[in-house]
Each structure stands twice: as structure tokens, then as C-alpha cells.
Length: 370
Image (tube, rainbow, N blue to C red; front, side, top):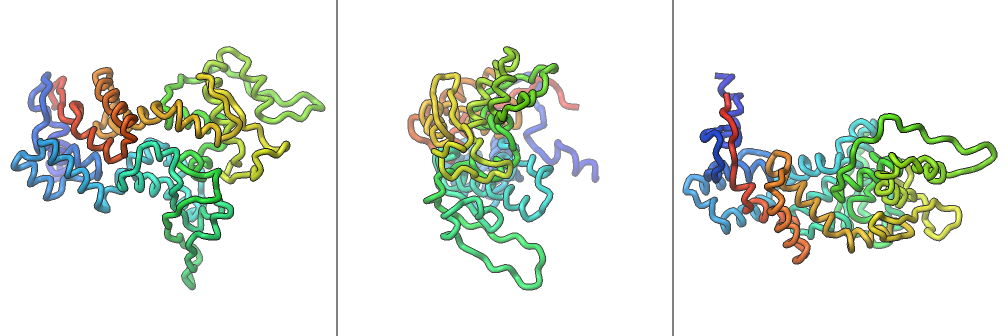
């Protein structure tokens, strides 16, 4: 009995049962309810979904659309940010970097709450980059400069040595160097150098595929005796190697734009014009130039906006389908991306487009399950 109850075929009714090997077909109402529930809640369908599956009405576009809206309004919807968001952004890397439990909780929870806000409050997809809304507690409030004075404070309970304070939703006003996911302290902390930060931004936000670095890459040489060179100046010499330049011409401008933040994600250059500040200027391979992250952000929200939205669509569809995307998914990706870009679409719009798409409503079985 235990083996039966723990069998994938019992736990996942439609997702793993190949009843028609070698054929492509529409999923049945129960399979659709299951896909929807595990996509948005990472949990089995509730009574409402099972009722709609039983009478078959969940197959109707207007019915499943209304269910998406309902499901995003309940507490279980946070599971989407906890699972999909953590996988997508690589937030789990903080688990190994931050050993202090209070700091770890603050740095890891903030981006999850932010994503949950975007997903469940019908915010535009591009607010992943542009939002002035954030979530703060005592553990991260110190990263926000003059805005900190307006943040809600909580008294420490008496007799408790360690505690985590609640997060509060907050609209940034003076901390112009923050905003969106890229400059959140936890994201910057888990990517502690310009190369890591540039690589993360390329892969996770822009969706650029980078190959593996060559196996024989030499270490970065120290500055010649008597010369004081910054890491960027030393690295410029390193990237003259053609085998390195191919990737680093994409990585470096993005990574060095964030050089005004230290390894802990703290903004260290309050005056962008200071002569002693880090060189945060750059030029993308596509030709756009900028002086600092603020300038890069304008480019991300302008010429690079469609690329960010396309990556968001691809990541979400892949998560919803529990598989890697294929060439056959490209028409769906193109259509949804075009719609989101044209209409300044929201995350809710994106989820609705996906659950009504052909890949989500069809399945293909290539062999018999044993």
C-alpha cells in the first residue's frame, strides 16, 4: 500500500501517465487542472478546480482565465515566487554565501516578496527592472540611504536574542540607485564581482546563452611594479585574448556598470560624478553607451526591453511545462512576447497567455512508461 501511495502515477494523475504512447493529444480536464495547480501553486488542485475538471468546463478559455485570477489572490500563490523565482534568479546561492541566519533571511526573502508582488498584484512584466516598489525590514533597511527614515520600524521583543523583523512594502523616493530586481542587496551579494554580476544579468535577465569558458584561461596578472591599476584596468589586459573577448564584450559592460556597489551590495559611490569613483561606463555590443547603471537601466527599458520580456516568457513557459523548451515552442513564445510588448502586459496577462497556449494544453508521449 505504501508503494502505491508513493508512486508517481498515483501522485501525478495525468502528468506522467502515458496512455497513448507515440501520439500528440490535448490534455484532458483533470490533467489541465493538475498542470494549472502545480504551475501557480506547486500543489494539487483544490475542490474548485476538481469541480471544473469533473464537468469539463475548465477546458473553456474564459473559465481557466478566471481561475488564474482567483488562484493568484490566495496565499498559496506565493509558492510561485518561492519556487519559480528562486530557480530563475538563482537566489538559492545565498544559502551557501550568507551564514548569519538573520542576514540570510532578509537578503533571501526580499526578492521573493518582490516577485510575489509582481506576480499577484497584476504588475507589468517590465517592472522586474523598473519598479520603485520594494520590501524592507531591519535587515535590509540600511541599504536604502535617506529613504530609511521613512521606513516602518519594529521593536525587538524582550528576552529574545535573535529575531527577524517583518517586511513592509515601501515605495522608493530618494534611493535612486535602487529599484527593480537587479540592484537588490541579495542579488548583488550573491554575485560579488563584475564578472559574476554581468554573467548573471546576461543569463537570468536578458536570456543570453553563454558557452563554457576556455579551460586554459590564464589568471589575471597583477599590476606592474610601481603602477596602481584598478581591477577593471588589469582585466582590460586580460580580455585582449580573442578566446576571452567573445564573451567578455557582452559580460563586462553590464558587470562594471554595477561596480558602484560593494561585495555586500551596498552602494559605495554616493556621488556619481566624483573623480575617485569606480569607472561604471560601458558600451554594449549592440552599440548603446552609458556612464553608469542608471544609464544602462534606460537602455534595458528601451532598446533591450523586448529581450527582457522574451526571456521572462521563455522562463515562465519552461517552468509551467516542467521541461526545456524546443523549436516547436517558438511560435508560442513569439506570439506572447509580441502581445506583452505591445500592451505593456502584466505578469497575470503572461500567466493567462501560457495556460491558454497550445504547449500547455497539449502533450506528446514518445514511449511506454514502465
